[in-house]
Length: 529
Image 1 (cartoon, rainbow, N blue to C red):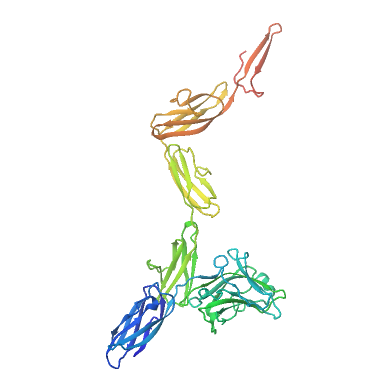
Image 2 (image 1 turned 120 degrees about the horizontal axis):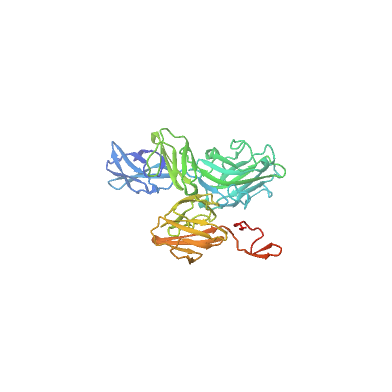
């Protein structure tokens, strides 16, 4: 005979660390009791885990591993005597699910269900999916509540469509959350909207008024976030909370033409273990986000916090958290344990690389991720993607992804074999211009080119003569990979006029004529008397 079965704690998370103590008293009239075992297969454990006799009671200690399914579990205890006779007893245990935010319906990510056949108060009242009007994304659930012949109206949405796998389990959650939009306050000052749920057998939860129940103060005409404790819905209800199939919307005070309602982002959150509020900051552009435990109601004290397999900390703030899914574990006095799975959303950053051609003074920027819609700002003022023929130095570029709003900074150093500078003498009247190229920091072997050909004065001559006003492409090469090209402009105005004269000795006149010059002739010199 097995009696006085005790289990401590009677509930916990499947975390592989929390110790569960199970004990029982056992007697045998023939005093030939052989052993006691407990079947832990309901939590993915052994089906004959031994119980040891300690101080007159049979005891077993074990942990609930992470692969154990959440929900109520039963541990069957078997006593066996020497003749093979058996007796049985059991202990109940609840495996808490990690607190998560689980979507019930979102038109753009989980658009499941149909209007329940016969689930409206009259043909004019209806509920349907619209391709527009969503809260954060286009698709929304819409309802029209039309009175007649009764002064009230209701509509019903069927989430499960008689599919057990799609029925919703409210038991491991604490809150029902959804976004709602009611235009024009519902059309009446005293308009209120009720929400309720039914299980697969038609049993209903409480029907809760959003305004009268204090979940909203008014209907603003914009999307509003509603948060309802599941305990409020289940209070005094015989519903099977593990098999929720339908959602109903009901209004009792309606204008003659009825009221419109838009619903979106319906999800369950929290855990019955404790009322914990956690806020997050997304990790945008490949950066880092934040997780902060803002409040704990229903716990104990002296809390400590950590991620799975990380060190404990007394601060409830986790910073520099990458995008991803994180299990936040909270422990406190008297064995308090709470685990919540938190998702840090984010957007990927942009990436790129710089490649430097020191010989040519070029910096090539290649973007490897991003939208492709970029702007560039270089430290030397350039706004092109790449730099060409720049002198030695360090260059930083700020790349902005105009679609995502992300930025990227990269730095490159150009170390050319030599620095080339140019001195220009402009052309003036009949005097041609010159360009003088000077190399500093090079190693010799210089050759000079103008407009693609060697300097007519000699390829090793650094002075270019006989230049009229205009822009010339000067290239300088040398040892060590020096290869520098730059456009250089010679200014000034050439005077190509010719002067003729006619002398009239009889009258003593001199007639001067000029040709080949513009009307506006600069003074290039003076005429001797």
